[in-house]
Length: 359
Ligand code: F6P
Image 1 (cartoon, rainbow, N blue to C red):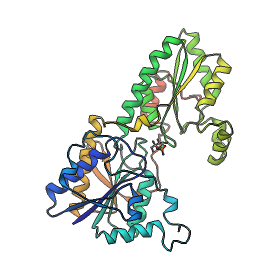
Image 2 (cartoon, rainbow, N blue to C red; image 1 turned 90 degrees about the horizontal axis):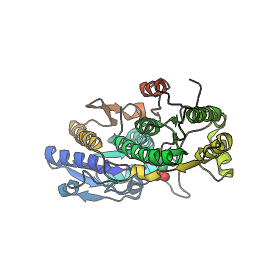
Image 3 (cartoon, rainbow, N blue to C red; image 1 turned 120 degrees about the vertical axis):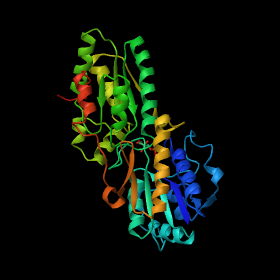
Image 4 (spheres, rainbow, N blue to C red; image 1 turned 180 degrees about the vertical axis):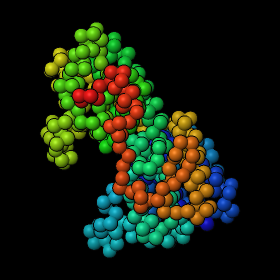
């Protein structure tokens, strides 16, 4: 049995921990199995690159950040188009190379885009298993994705540190947290870090509501405020625009997110001193947390179990402490957004945290 494996899309903590879980399961439980590592995500499969992985390759990597396989972003929309004079599409090339490598199955560790491509490959007849990776926690059908909780820890620590300097100076500080389409990371880190205002892509905000909250805090003697704002947050006005128009408008101001504009508006309207902090890719780097190591060990070994059972065309899902799976075709193209009635949003509102809208 030849098992291909690749890591695709943006990296995150715990990719290696999952690879370790898979490798150790396979070499312990599937006699004569071979694991073939494909470098740089789908890019490596398109180019037909691979290397045989020894059992020892999966040791000593549990707590190592990044991915020993390397990764790349390969947009799903380009998978079915031909490049220039190329007679075949990228998806067809991947199918050819899967066959040339004599793979019996392919395990893809990745986020929402990776899963769309995994579903496409599965529809072309490849035996594919997807594993739910991303600090965004936006994969449909799983309680959580690996990498998310480590990023929550990092972003929370960042807000903690900003808290003390904001308090010392009496400033309003905006911490821009990763998450272009969904606000899970901002919601979790915002609450865990004690932010006063949390702005999510799912809840377009009203600038005057943010102004009101900061003013009320100032009037009650709290000279500083902390805003946890997702990269993908937008004003109510921006939400009426198409994504392309919204980005074009921001580009005119030399910005890709709304954070700096909000900081400037708050300075103008409230008179407070504002600062923007962007932890960026720090949230994706470094060692996975113990919780991520635990779920990654489960996810990786469960993927090995699915291979042993001959169950393909699925993605692993975490349901409480139990591993299960969903069909790729059922989850591909869907996203797990923060619902407006999420219990954490209720708890946050109940203690006075503002989401920049009227309750
Ligand atoms: O999907 C993970 C993520 O970190 C998003 O939160 C972020 O918007 C994006 O990737 C950044 O991508 P890149 O690594 O290409 O800058």
